[in-house]
Image 1 (cartoon, each protein chain N blue to C red):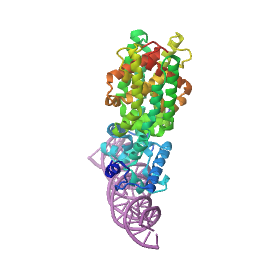
Image 2 (cartoon, chains in turn yellow, purple, brown, green):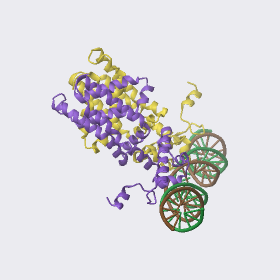
Image 3 (cartoon, protein in one colour):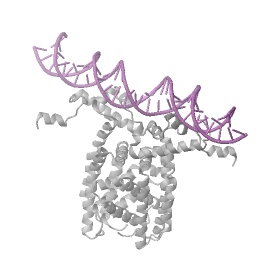
Length: 219
Length: 219
DNA sequence: CTCAAATCTGACGGTGTATCAGGAATCGTC
DNA sequence: GACGATTCCTGATACACCGTCAGATTTGAG
């Protein structure tokens, strides 16, 4: 790789320079402040000036490193893209047969809920922006969930070949549906508790439907 | 009802007056403009000044009728609360047994997708605001979905009593999970097509999982 | 210590928010 | 159809945030 090519894929400040150590540090600080504020306030009320204040710097500095607030959030979201990897392992490396399969479904459900819980503030925005048709966020969401969906699809395809699943079932659509269920329950977890539904019962239902949906087995 | 009590539940302008015909008309115009703009732009970029411009009036007029942008969107969302009613009828008045049951599940899926499609711009915001913990939107979302969830719960409870569903299954949690699946697939419908999954296959998977989840039958 | 590169910020023009006093339209009444 | 009262609307305004740039400050290599 030429020096030119390397520089091209490196971080750039708004004026085109490649940031040094100090620069990268303030950039990181700005990012973590963005994440922190997003935990407490709505996306609509996330202001550059607040991020700058939190980072002990000025708004102008923020614009040195990001084009706008969305760019910062987008980067935070980008960091989640690899998070899907551990879920994929879980899906591929565990047995989906019988009681073991139910155990796998439960573990996957827990892992999903946990992933969402740890990143709920960002994932909320990713969800909204994707629904609004923002292609950048859509891409991130795809990268995060696509691996998981594909892994599930393969497992489902296996059960279909064994005639455990209906012949006309589309494994990819089925996988996407199950992932949707997981994502939505994870996103609205707090809402269910508020609604009077016990969290562990919710988990059981999700895991059970996941198991049935993947394997074609009965409840 | 006393005049005082009636006035108390009537519409009020910001200065406390009860609006007359002209006032209600501009109010409606502002609401429809809000909805219209929300179709094309993100919630984050929804500005009072744009709504006012669209309605051919001034920002000050907007504030005559709404405290802020959120109040207007909240009212638009409130109008959806009764939309759940037709779904409830569908759930209660149709058979869930055998092939008929599968037909019912398909109809419900279609009705759900249609409801979301017709109101996607507003429902996006409801979803986000609910996830962000906004209780006003949470309430609306609950009213919209709670009836449907309760209706599904009753049907599930029936199948549980017939030993078609596991004894330890919580019908309410199961219903909430299925509604989550419906809501999320509906919200991200366009995303799936973009992702290369055929819309009709998606619908089939959702309907099938819904049928299985409600009745406990096999695929 | 010196100086050039890297980093930061004060200052500014532009846009949106939210309020209020007062101007304009409407309506009932004579 | 003119009057006054009521309803409705808006210009003016103070304030907040955005996004940019020139230049001040800091850093660190020599």
